[in-house]
Length: 120
Image (tube, rainbow, N blue to C red; front, side, top):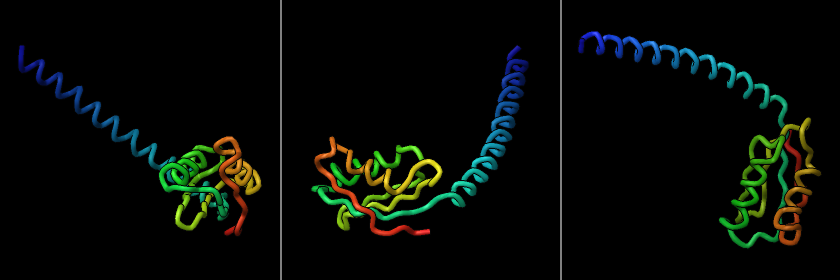
């Protein structure tokens, strides 16, 4: 009885491993195509942010909120330079919208954002 149980367990395990590997390969292919599409449609902008007083409480909070905003594909806020570099989908958001979004963080009283340059 034990050899049959062992063989059954081995068979189920091998089927599970094989099916998972196959699904992962399909998912990775789709993801890479979507990433290429995103790269082709994104724009970048640098935005100066005044009012930040610390790296963790201010810069990281702004970066985290920007990263979650619809249309933003990548956000990086550098505290020492007081600059946010943002990659975004221009079909979903705009530079003006991003600037207003930053100005509205923390009730709109702490940060003042202004566009520096657009990078294409």
